[in-house]
Image (cartoon, rainbow, N blue to C red; front, side):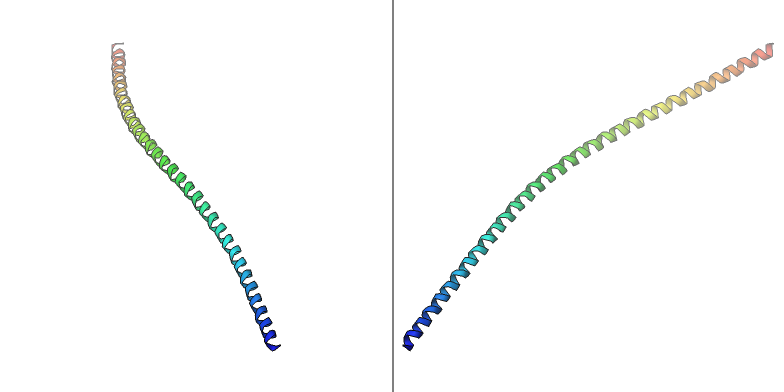
Length: 117
């Protein structure tokens, strides 16, 4: 009788142990599935961020090229404007000299008219 009780107890312990292992195995499987899902999600997010980064880098390169071209155009425009301004100043100085000569001639003529009158 005692042997039978011990055998039943051992059987129950084995049954409980087996049930406990099955529960743990089931919990581990659920946890592994969750972690796999999280990993896949993280990989998808990493790919999305990499694509976004690639696009941003391309846009930055395009903007730098555009900025370089615009800066070159501005330098050319500045050089052209500076040349035009220098030419304009030169013309003004020439006109001022001519105006000064004309004024002198007018004053000379006025002085002659006064002296002959």
